[in-house]
Image: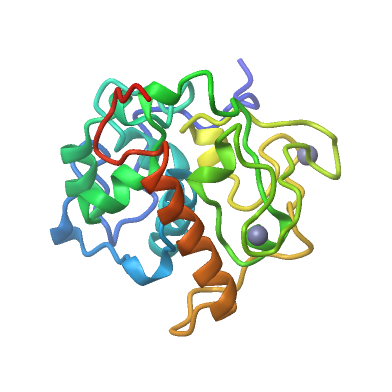
Length: 225
Ligand SMILES: [Zn+2]
Ligand SMILES: [Zn+2]
């Protein structure tokens, strides 16, 4: 029998990162993950956070998706809404403040009011940013670059479901279908200085906080307006 169909097996593969001694069910701070909250802007989406986390720690996407919960199948994934995830568990795993994680996820009350496919600003992906607000129906342009938010890949014309699964998490800043970058090149590696211009960072932060003050209530999962 040929083994040419051997793809990424979801389980029982030897850890490829011996330094981390990867126990996918229980990744702990003791293992020495690195993540710096300064890499994030207010309202940075969970997908953007996971892209940065994977990149900084050399973690495979399926292992990272498994951190979303013990019952989560990494290939099927889980909806990026607060009610679908155990935030306490996520906080422990990703070592990020609860408010950063809550802000990165959509409200259950917004179900049906957010895009089911990944939606992006090309300039932002170039700089390694994706905001949770880009997934909302009410948003049409990036508050910093004023560019129209897009869903289709420029290369293959396909859209990618906005689900935390191995496919999307494993395709940072690129189309999960064909692998083409959404921007002209990959975002710069993590530096001490933010890649995005100050006025653009301010515009994104201000816009997110305005949204929070409006219909986007943090910490209230089933808000009715
Ligand atoms: Zn932008
Ligand atoms: Zn594509």
